[in-house]
Image (cartoon, rainbow, N blue to C red; front, side):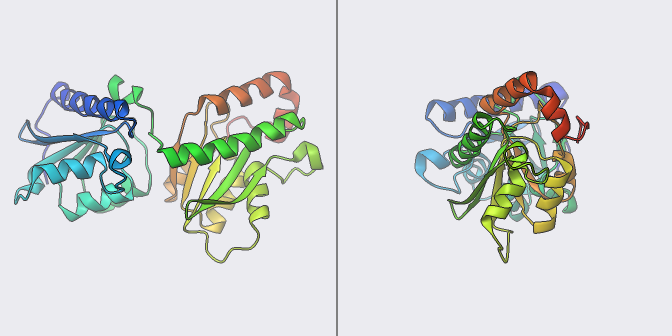
Length: 290
């Protein structure tokens, strides 16, 4: 395994290079993500995400960086620096090519990919930098943006009905298969949260493992429990500022959670809480944490 012989200052400089590549991708209307491969303190390859530009799902920044490094026999001595949290595709590539270590320019967290890499004893360092943080706590792709917008429209509809503005959609094979929103007020039913309404509208499904759930707000414990119970493996959350919810619980149990930090989701819920704090307090059973 590679050892991080560089100082934090040097590591930060490599992440700055990766962030510059991410900004380059952004100027090309691509996903703002960048990566750098380093050996013994020297950059041997760097790249930015080209998956959108090339319509190539395997042209992720990290994979393109490994590709540019060419055929090598010293992979275990290489350290991969990246501006974002890895997904399973990137984690699989790191393992396939036996990359020695990973440095992520964001705060420590856990998802399925990170969990897998830790199980396989890949050293992971979280080194948050201003440049990487500015790119977003976790970059979401255009498809995620599109489906999260659909969940937001559900939340907005609920707000306009006088209800609690939390919306959700379920997506399978790139298609929305169910929609839902919190209807506690509209139907007088405390069980109908955005996620549970969406699950009910989807009907009985034999296998939920290839379904993504999009929700505008971090799930409460009831909804997090439903996600675990039905075996949903990936959840995209609009925001956790107004309600921290149970993102950590889901991640600790192997669910991949993407936090979008969406401004529209935050603004709508914030407005609602300010206007109807009594109703919000009732909906969360007085527990503003979970």
